[in-house]
Length: 433
Ligand SMILES: Cc1cc2nc3c(=O)[nH]c(=O)nc-3n(C[C@H](O)[C@H](O)[C@H](O)COP(=O)(O)OP(=O)(O)OC[C@H]3O[C@@H](n4cnc5c(N)ncnc54)[C@H](O)[C@@H]3O)c2cc1C
Image (cartoon, rainbow, N blue to C red; front, side, top):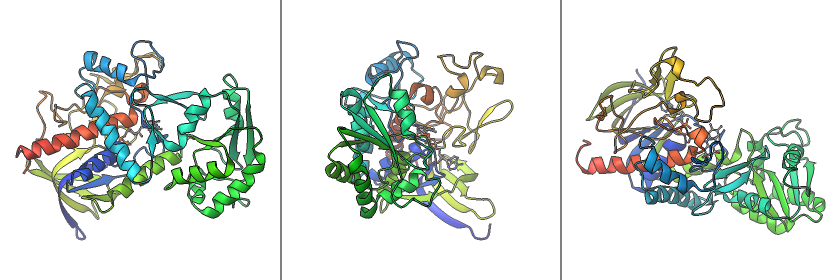
């Protein structure tokens, strides 16, 4: 405990996955003095797509292009779902504010107002999503148009195979050609990884070498598809340069992890927080809560041997589920890792899973999590706030199954928007010291 720093803050955001980072952006936009702490989160695994709702609630097992119709059904029939107490306009506002902040930092997102876009995945499936990176805009368009494509991959790359993509897309399209090229500057490497390629793509030199290699390969194709490696910080600019020089429309295809669009998203959000009222404590986790009350929280971050000590007047818990380590499953029970908050869960472990693994209703364990009141505060079994100043957002919330319903990023964005606005409302009401 000797080298113990001491930080005082209005709000500590615990968790820096999609939920924590979205909350940090919303807090920064409102000038809230806050710190955000946590590990990498799910970004490196995520496709970088921002889903709102992708599964039909009327035709079992099918995907949907109409997220708003499905949300209407949630508002009417699923009162416990975290989306249920949100208005359509609030959800739109949350997405708009987040994507506007990303765009201001050079990462543009696109999509329809009312419909999901259908993005081609590396496995030849179509994934419904609400907002997609600008570099995948032509991915959606190319599928609809009857024009020929050239699909590229790179020697030594495992995260994407052009030949496999062509094979699985064969049922939709016959006019796909593939080509495997050596990525500029990688002749001595037997294996290459997408983040490495993306960071190299940032330089003019690599862009020009790429253009020189690819130009002679293009015949009658009007579209060029490639794994998502078009840079990390200037993907839109790189796309525009390549399209102009090569004279074709170019689209990225999401890859299996490690995912560059996910890394782009995280790094852009981090950049947006620079010089803002929200400071980052990267890779530090809350390891111990020394004091917790309606007056604030004293926490140790990092390690108990060499901790950062922080006093926060309020906390936003965005620590994710089992992967993020916000929830922990013992032999008998699911626990919340920091405060041991009440976790809404099936009565016994036997009820965690259904007999049929592929049951379309999903498994009950995936709906376990923290319940909140209308102000996004964690509640106890009597549905009273555990503390006036403990807010919760993201995938740790109960009564949702984001993987099955394809609403991952949307759930994080919308519930974090609500949590930050609720925090400000409660603070204005004088209930946070
Ligand atoms: C494989 C995969 C693919 C995905 N694909 C998509 C997709 O295509 N579209 C989409 O919309 N979404 C997708 N997502 C979902 C999305 O990226 C987010 O993972 C999801 O929204 C959950 O975010 P979260 O912030 O709640 O949790 P997490 O991402 O799990 O983040 C939890 C955070 O809390 C931190 N934490 C945990 N304990 C502590 C502690 N004690 N103190 C401080 N910090 C702590 C962790 O370090 C981490 O930073 C995908 C996710 C995965 C894993």
